Image (tube, rainbow, N blue to C red; front, side, top):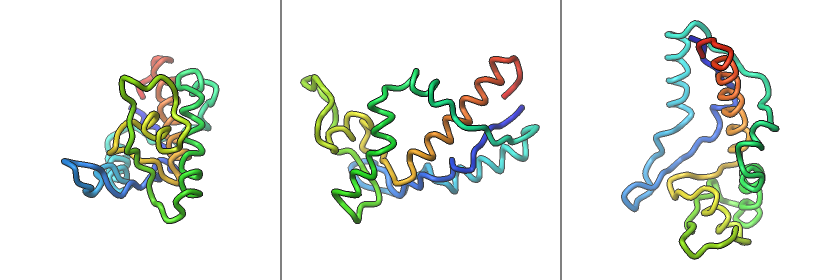
Length: 147
């Protein structure tokens, strides 16, 4: 078996998550991913760094507005709140929402849709690195190789 892993996947250091109405320490952290990476190195044939993600394929699968939000949302948030470390949505879609909100916080709720998920300064790079790994593994699996 082959594991695909890009070092940029170690970004996206989420500090907190919402649990039971309280902010608690995040579980999905670079430290946890490092442990998984070490386990993959120990029990798979190889760990390979994928090439660049095919943005054409990504754009076929995901809404372009969503991708733009992931790429630019945190920078826009930092302009509004310079000391912010995380963009956490607090507004979410409902039965009466008929369009994408104009406001940044409304777009965050529309696209993220979970108060336990956040957007960070390096979310875009981390997300694209993860997509590159997923696409490389998928291509190998479709070729009949274990990935």
